[in-house]
Amino acid sequence: MKNEAEILIDRMMNRYDVFTISELAQRIDTSQPAISQWKKKNYIKAIASKCRELGIYDEIFGQKKPEKQGGGLFSEDTRRELNELIRKEDEEIIKAGVRDFESYKNYKKSQMKDGEDIDEYEIGLDYKFFLARNTTMELYGIDDVTVGIIKEAYNKAVKNDDLKGFRIHLMDY
Image 1 (cartoon, rainbow, N blue to C red):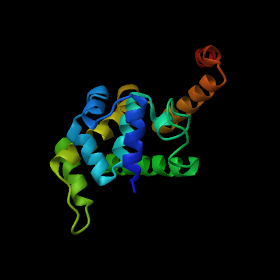
Image 2: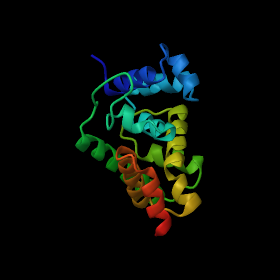
Image 3: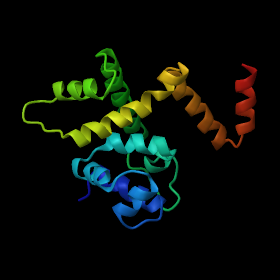
Image 4: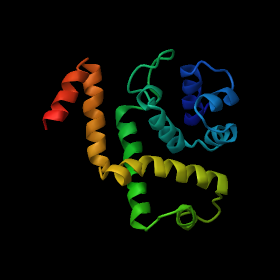
């Protein structure tokens, strides 16, 4: 039986019409070992971050019908819970004063339970996705809630085929 990460990776492979993890890695500008780790460790958070970066999150996580594969892996409630967990973890990391990779690595290691193991490579991937999620706020001073609202409104405008109206409304404000 496949874990959730394997199902999501299969969707990504289907989306990009590739047959191997190596081909997928090339298409999404990620290393093959990174994707293998996502699969092996059922690393949903990394897949979600990469999908957001690529603009395919809704398609892969089931909010809109994928081009070649139907259905959603997670219910809307589950997706909201995952997003909320990621947001809360990011807030904790920021509160902990993480400013660079070394402090991020120390923070992650301090959060591990006895017997847990995490390698430098995985911490590096995690840090990269943390930065990607939090760049908007750092660059533009826009908080995550506002970005989320803008994304929801944008998706609604796309669904209603009224992108022009959405843009006009933003500009009028």
